[in-house]
Amino acid sequence: MFKIIVDRECGCFKRSDLQNNIEVSSKDEALTKSLEMVQHMNNEFCAKHKFKVEEVGDTFLVKMQ
Image (cartoon, rainbow, N blue to C red; front, side, top):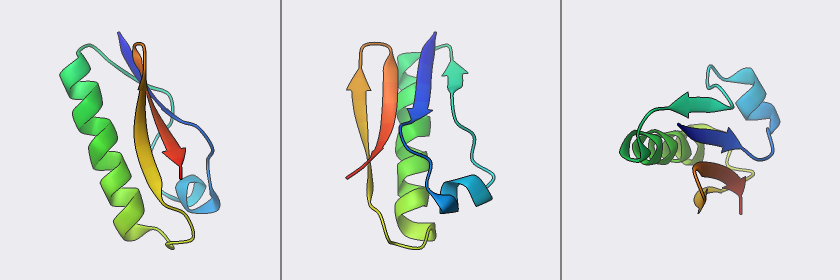
């Protein structure tokens, strides 16, 4: 299993429909979902923060830059 974890939940994330601590069965699915999440967060949130994906073992961390 692979995890997608949002490292620090900003206010926009908490108000959104996005979920934290997601588990998926494949690495490709985890990478795709985490990149889609980051793209959405960077384009649709208030723009106070920028987000990136960092791979750590079997975990994809969505981190503030």
